[in-house]
Image (cartoon, rainbow, N blue to C red; front, side, top):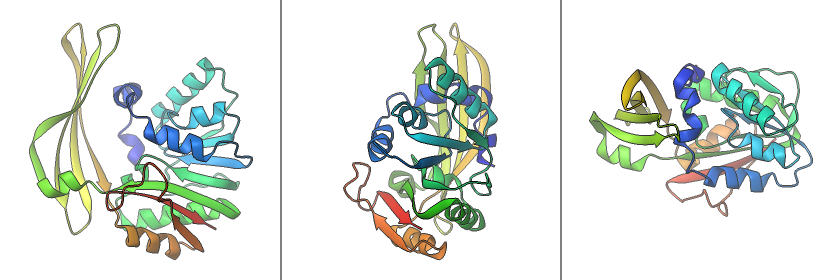
Length: 250
C-alpha cells in the first residue's frame, strides 16, 4: 500500500519538497475551471491540487492511502476556510466509496505508484465503476528516461533540499535501479531531518514507480471498459515520448 510510505515526517515535509512545482496544480485547476459536476481525486495527498480546485467552488472529494497526508489536507482546509471536504482513506487499487462521480483524476504521475499489473487493472476497474455514464477519467504519466538511460544509481544522490524559516531542514537522497522487463524504477530513499543544524531523524524507505508506453496505456484503458480514449496533446504537461495526459470516457 503506497500510503505506508507517506507517513510521519515524510508527510509533514511533502508540501515543502514540492513547493516549486506548479504545472500540475495549474493544469488540473484549469481543466476543472467552472466544472459543474462532482469530482474525485485519487492519491490526493495533502491537497496540493484538490484544495485550489475546491476553493474555486468545484464539488471535489479526495482519496488517499495515507492517514497522515489526509490529516494535513484537513488541517489546511480548515486553516484556509475551505468548506468541509469529504475524504476517504482507501487504496486507489481497491476502493469502494458507494457513489459515482462525473470526473475522476490522478495527478502528477501518482498512478505509477501501482507497479503490479493486477493492481493496475483493479484500480482502473474501480475508477470505471465509480464514474457516471459519460464521466471521464484523466491522468498524467511520465517515462523516467534519465534513470532508464543510467540504469542504476548505486550511491545516493540528493533530490530535494528544503529549509523552513525556523531553520529546520530536510534533505532527500535517492538511489535506484531499473527493471526494464517490468518497466519499474526501484527506488530507495533516505530522508534526513535537521533542527539547529543537527540530524534529529533519518528514515529509509523504498518507493517504486512503473512507467507506461503511450499505446500500452491506451490498451489498458480500453481493456478496463472505457469506450473513448483521448490524448490531451494540448496540455502543457504533455511531452511526446516523455509525458502523456490521457482522458478516458465511460
